[in-house]
Length: 272
Image (cartoon, rainbow, N blue to C red; front, side, top):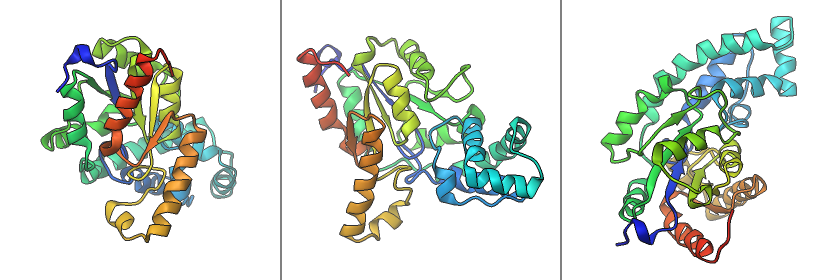
């Protein structure tokens, strides 16, 4: 066991859905689909997934900007998608997501053990999310009951700007009393979440198999053939690598060797 003075990594900041809880990042999908359906516009789960990681109001805005969705909205509503429509959808989406998030609160296998190992090294555990606090309220205590309780929580809406800016990471630096940025690792399953870590000057680790990139439940993933599973992994690795992730792993259970690698690089004077 190592103590704080042995670790050059001062903190690891985790995303929530798809990274530490909600295998496959399933909770928001139905809420997005249902919210748009309330206005007579059909969107697919695949379309709903595309902007994942953004604050949820920005996510809705990004969905409405998709050419097919924008055209469907204009056909259904008789006018172009605008700011008032984003607000109306958001008012419907948030309570829908609050209702469903507690049913997707299972901590992903390997998370609790990895977090315990990080803490044994004196590494602080932070968290950021694209969810607002209203959505997180039922989720946080359920995760804590299962052994996952990070040292802080920064939500979309807490600050004037969220992902992909560095603002929520800067809040983590303050909350956790950690610095420099190069001593902090951001772990996330989405492109905006990786961008958040990069913008803050941190090491970034992308999550493939448990998160939004694959988007399957644990049972659905286990049912895939080895060839299908490899194809899903390759696609996710390519996406997260293009987003700038320094490392890409299947899930948080695979994180500790990456932390060791980052510490080795820091000792050699390397920076993100």
